[in-house]
Image (cartoon, rainbow, N blue to C red; front, side, top):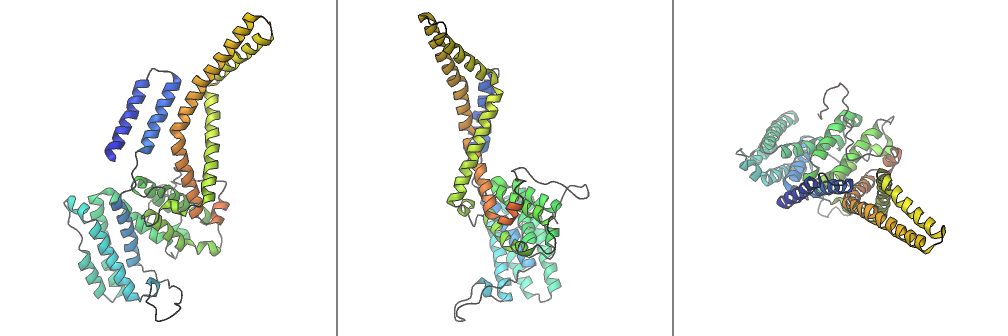
Length: 386
């Protein structure tokens, strides 16, 4: 897949190079072809990155367990679900998930010539510790070593692991939810998500980053405890996790009405492009209109056969100029950006679907875009996630 993408990009670059010195229409078409090729050079995500993200989230849960309880079973004789497991059983399951995640990344770590962290021994050692402080100290030490190993093996794996940990801390019933959603912190986390977008599942990164930023902007306007909306943050985080880890496909959250709105948005953007295109080539539009007007005048004005013939020729020339110079160029440009526009509209629809309605509506005037990272640090230093 990477080879095909490189070939596509090479053809697009060659097209741009060949167009140097050509007409403005040819140069515009070639530039759009290059942009289209770059857009298409994307994979369906790197499974290792998704595993590293899930591993980071799981380590955060092992370090600070989530003690939410589920609904009461209909019958006490039923087999227990995860929400009914004991604290010891939940801890054991969490440590097993950490082992499984590290095992899945073993090849990447070994290929880098590094030692694979011994997750089995770690699980046994932690399981023997009854003192909460000693347990957290052991988990923290293992976490630091694992983060260092993954970052050294592949920078994307280290970043994905850190992203999973940070997103879990942000959403899993944080004691200081406003602090977790502070602008400088969210800027860093959403930046990591966008940087890993090509390695994450399709249509997951930008909608989740936009949704996270929307929560941050919303939290800055709230007084009190944030009401019922704030209590949705934990379930919101689990939804973000399911999309970024590939557990749930982003397009699965959409309904028929979402596709209809996406189509309407695409038509509006296409119309705006047509208007800008015509403004850019106003001289071509003016020439076609003048030829058309001249043709009509020659036919209805002098009334001679020669004038009528010249008038017809002028009209045909205006039609040909319009079709070849305007219609063809605009059609080519539209075809080149049709797919990227559609994908962008789907991202917007997913963002609105996965974010609480009250947050989306309150921020309707500020539509988040694919490059709206909110990179503002309170102290003037580069923002960092704790």
